[in-house]
Length: 219
Ligand SMILES: *Cc1c(COP(=O)(O)O)cnc(C)c1O
Image (cartoon, rainbow, N blue to C red; front, top):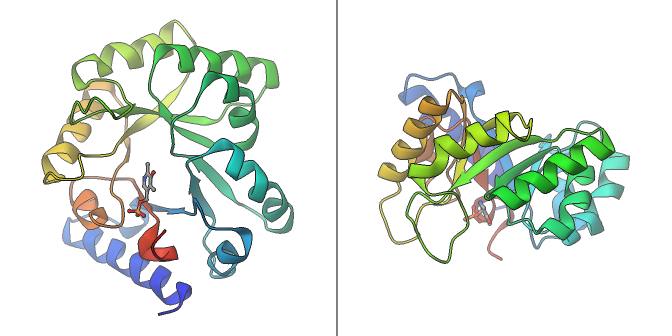
């Protein structure tokens, strides 16, 4: 199958999952995760009308997106990988959405850069719903206090929550937990679901899904 067919199929399945959950298909946006793929591999997706892309490394994204952006209108770039504070300046200038605000230090660095550059990327707080030691993210029990802190102490406006459930568990309960935490924080946006579980995520209320290999092939 060609990339454009795979992309169409993912879109179709998102639409079906949304409708069977009684939701509008346009209530779910597709973040096409293009990490590890070069500009030539990404091009067919852009030509097929895809505009929202996710990258997990600041440096890799800097290498390929500025030129693609200069060529195509309306590209929206999401950072979906961990951010180090020494890369905060680059991340704030390159990304439209940073989905991985996962600790106080990085929230503070983003706030300082947003001020300095007069540029405000949309922000998601990453929640470690499975409390996995190797995984980034705020613990579920600390999420509400952290979002409050970002808002009141750092002046950041947080748009939603993001999670990556443990690979070996049923993702449903993790998606449900993220939705519950978001409601408690008064947040409407939920970034959850990847190639293996995006339809489940839509059923649990995802407003964006991050799909890589189902579109671009295996990495
Ligand atoms: C790589 C990645 C994805 C996409 O994973 P696929 O299984 O290839 O769809 C989604 N979210 C994050 C945070 C990722 O790092």
